[in-house]
Length: 130
Image (cartoon, rainbow, N blue to C red; front, side):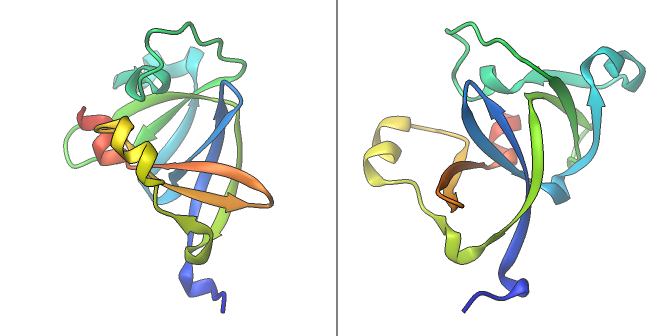
């Protein structure tokens, strides 16, 4: 049975037509990329952190997520922030064994199915430390 107590909110965004989710409680602010200099934080590009660095990625609506952290605050550039979704635990699945075996040390934590759409849920600690 689905319960509001068994949900987690995720910020959903798209890069290269793939939907990703980051827990909203880890994000302190969303900043337009052209205003990031005022923040004085280290910024990295999401596609490079997940291994798209060999491919040129065209960002349509780049935004910087200011991430709450144990160390200094960091920013990560994402594209096309869409929505904040409540995802029930019952809608979250572990990565398939085949993908885990070939993905190595991926920052993808799990997969959610929401309204017939696959969303890759990210492990931000892993993403920011590798």
